[in-house]
Length: 444
Image (tube, rainbow, N blue to C red; front, side, top):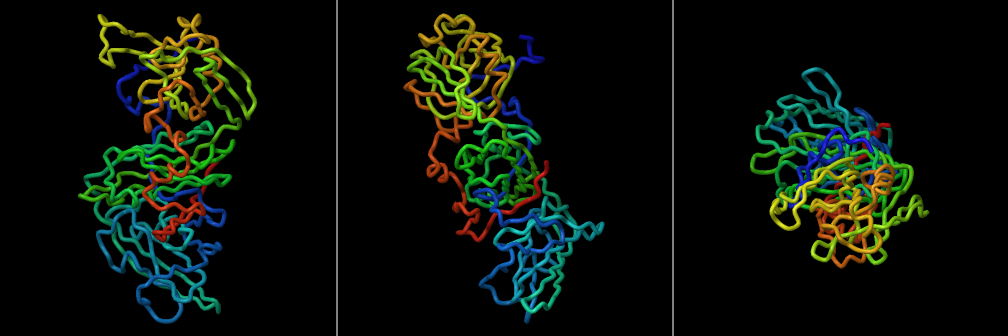
């Protein structure tokens, strides 16, 4: 095959720089423990909260902020200054059945787009607000008798902070992924445990068709989202991570928002590797399309068994044992450009071309932990698969380390939910906090 236009070096001793991923890197964070329910509708600026979920005004335990009919802004309070750029508009309804929120930038008169949370608890701007800017909120409401009322208030956002945390997304905008691809968000600094719920409330995932899903904090600087079951083929995914301006404690703030519109492939491709038979089986839409002999990790460097996905695809990568501390004069040294490399773990487990082990493929395990294929079979597989295609490896006797890669599918659903910073409810509502999903516009 023709050589790739660049050779990538692999550090097999530790997690590689995420910038090496074969994915566009974008930032993202927001709310929802699952995709927005069908009743949740996107509302452009000035639109009405009139869906079944949103027609129900938010009830609070606070005293009414006015008499009679209408709705009044609760926060930010009228005239408030130094307001975070991530602020949401909350209000108290007084017998109102239809509420319209309009947010205007006083500097230029521009109307800010936004959406109502499904439970009507707040109105969420589509992106972080401008810093050091005065905004006007207008609430227009109507009661059951058709009487209308208007309430107006103003607030001013804080100056731009100097200490910010950046957010990246491993799911690239406009890209296509396999049915097992998780949404993976990385932060430039650790997120304190007591701030993770607030961050997660600002992570919004919408899918067509709707599918149940949840967030899981893999580490203090990494959070993943996966559906309960593998994505349905052809799924459209829209991610709005409204992280910009979010207070994170100790004077730190979110540095950026991220929007990603991606899709899932039209065919469900999966890989199973069985060390007992030393065979790889590839299926498409549930039907076996190819079986190939493999050689896997030898006894001293076994291949991990578990549920993984393809994380990167590189036509060529440089494998170098010096990254593991094994030098040229030591047993086990290697430095070689490898063709058709499909990464499965951060620890250095791949499926790749290995013409030197063809005689052992199907009969013996001789690798350093990777799954070896012949050059012909490796190229066929490389051309067939997508990032995010599921890979199940079994009968090696070495369990997969949790978080060593995109291992989201290596835990059952109930255990996966334990990694969420918010209580989970499959309806899409975070009932214990009074928050709910927001449906932002999906783009083709």
